[in-house]
Image 1 (cartoon, rainbow, N blue to C red):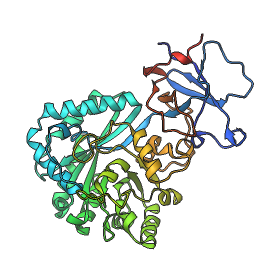
Image 2: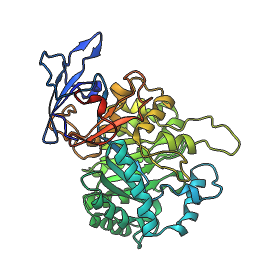
Image 3: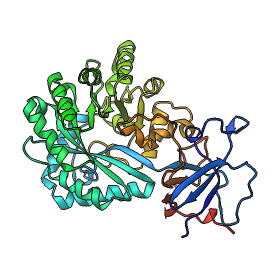
Image 4: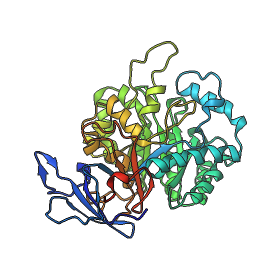
Length: 424
């Protein structure tokens, strides 16, 4: 199918529109997107008086978003649930089940499952996906690590795949070993990041410092599982923010989960977020997995939601993303590598206002994973025409009825039925 030159009457989210965009009855007017050579050349109000070309696509108010970033997944674990027996509730029960399943892992097994996850992500409109990879031994690269590097090459140009070493915090207790681990990750390539599992069951401020210092020495960005628990005494996030300031960390650190904020006294939690706002930290919230694993006891309905303080983080200007996390494994039996599902869950559990006009940026802002903080407002102009069109949703109810969509890559349809938009 020929790529359209113009998408007329597109409904863009408010966060993606330039300042001064006209409104009608308090609602931003529809947009006209000009495409050329696979990129967005201009974005103008559709009501600017210009006559449309008969060959243009009339979207008639269809919701449009940029391609998604799924900032926290576990491709190495995906789709393992069908071969497991009983899984005990909670995070630690899921970890035990995953350890038992490792006897089934081979390079071909991991490749097949991870490739399936990437295919699903590609079909839903994701352009950038970050996966964590379990790394258990200090002197042995995990079986899945080179598989992810291979998949990153195979999927180049379709999905940008990054991989994070998910290493137990005690393995960083020795500074020399921390540097060796960082060098191994660095040698993988620019798509690799140093990571760790920071939890009260393995807590060591010294090990966390060694991890961050080693990353700084190797010029690596960092992506951590932090305080994935409803323990008010957990201090991983606040300690991370403090150490980053002390060492003058120059990269970007992503802190995933940070559920413990929701269990802490208000003043303590907000003071921690104030410190995070002064550090080069992005928060990634994983609502589906945290709902399933936090406050989990057999035969008992959970009382706490497990989601972190997303509104309070945003109020402080902290970059915040939602992501899929685990998919059909012992950590989360559901999921489809569609980050829109994560936002749909968050919209309910965190009582989010304006999911489309405001919070949808928490699925699209790949720049929030980069080192340089954005100094200008986000824009489609000049970007690749990687777009997702929601053909049955509206701005009030989205992400309800969001499953049916048309995906454009470089302005061309890769998935979905664009027939309703074609000139007649």
